[in-house]
Length: 447
Image (cartoon, rainbow, N blue to C red; front, side):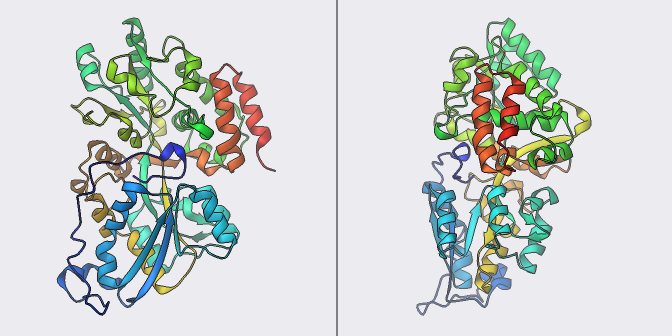
C-alpha cells in the first residue's frame, strides 16, 4: 500500500526491505546502454528504444514504501535504459499544484484523489493516455476503476495501488472463545453486537480523530452503508451532487450508521461513551480488541499496519478482518475503497512507456513479490500476495460479483469531501441532529 497524502490512507511498512525482484539481473554496460537482448529483459521488449532518457515521478509515497516502489521498477529501468527519478512528499497535494502552476510539473504523478485528477484534466494540464497505455489498462482493470480517470471522454491513466475499506476487524480468538461466527449479513452483525453487549462486552470501538482531518473515518461509515442500502447509481449521483447531499436516502443511511455509532450500548469499547469517538485517534481506534475490551472495528485494509508489531494478522492469528456484510442482498457485493492513479503531464515516448508499464500485469506481480501491496490489476497472481489481509483484499477486488466504488469524500469537491463532511460528522457524533448536519453539508456545496 502507498503512504498517501491523505492522512486516512497513511501507514508504516516494516520488515520488507530485504526483498528484491531480480532487479540487477539485466545490468547495464559501462557506457550506460542496457543489455536489452538478455533473456531477463525479454519481457520489456515493447518498451525498448528509449535508452538514455529520464522520467520524473512525483507522489505522496515515501519512507520505506518509497524504497519498495523504487525497487519495483529497477529491472525495467535497467533493461530499457530509462532512468526513473522518483520523489515522494508529505506535502504532495499542495506542492503538485504549485509545481504545475509554476511550469515545473513532474512527468508522471500518482494521484490518489479522482477529484484532484479531474481538476488537472479540466484545466488542460494532463496528457491523455497513449493508445498503448489505454489498451493495457482496459485489459487489466475493471471498468469501475477506469471511470475515475476518464474525464470528458478522455482516459488519463490506470490505477496503481489500491485499498479496500469495507472491512471489520476482529479477534479470531475472542470469536472462538465466545462461540461467535463471522456475520454474513447486516442482521447477523446487529445480532452479534446485541449478544456481545448482553455479555458485557462493548461490541464496537471507533476512533475518528485525525488531526486536521478529524472526522474522515465517520464519512467512510456513511459511504459503506449508503452503498449497501442504495444502488451504485444513487451513490454516484450523491458524490457528483446529481442528488442533494441531504437527500432522504442519505439521511436514512446516516441514521442506520447511527444505530451503531451513536448507541451507548455498542460503543466505545476501551475508551468511553459515544462522545469519546471524536477524541479517539483513528490509529488507536481498534486496539482495545486485543485487550478484549471490544469485539469489532470497521476500518480499511491499511489498518493492518496499526496493530502492534508482535500481533499476527491472519485468519487464525491475533487479529483479522471480514468483509463488511451486505444490508440489502439485492445490492450485490459493494466494496468501498481507494487507490492512486498514474497520470502524465508530458507525452514524450519514454513517459508513455513508463506509464504503460505501470499498468501491466508484469509490474503488478513484480511489486507484489516485494510485499505489502494490493492492486485491482486482474493479472495479479494471488500466489505473489503473501500478506493475508492483502490477499483477502485482492480476492475481493478480483471477485466478479464485487461492485467497486471509490471513497466518496475523495470524489467530492475538497470544500465538501475534505471540509464540511468531515466537520459535520464530528458534530453529528457529538449529538447534532442528522438532518441539520446534512443540511449544513448541502449548503456548503460549491455552486
